[in-house]
Image (cartoon, rainbow, N blue to C red; front, side):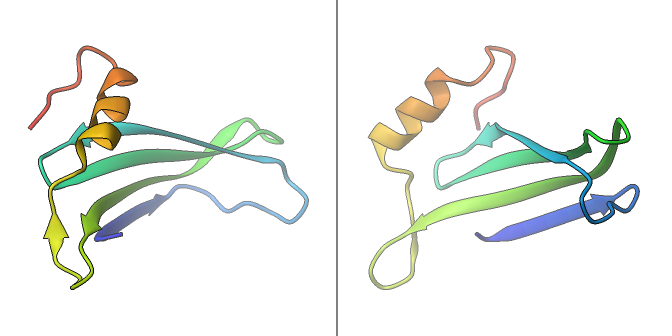
Length: 85
């Protein structure tokens, strides 16, 4: 994980049923982004939106290009309207 952003909309209470929905939204040469929505099924509203940026690293901890097999699988499941960078 190289970055996280969370925008809280409303609190969730203990015992409320939360649904965490997520999907790839951006894929670059060395990183990818997943957007999340935390939806409260109990009250029918969104609690938060989140974005997480990920990267692969080598044994020295340096960021490397996304391995082709992973990248291909991710891109095969992304909506055609997504822009690749």
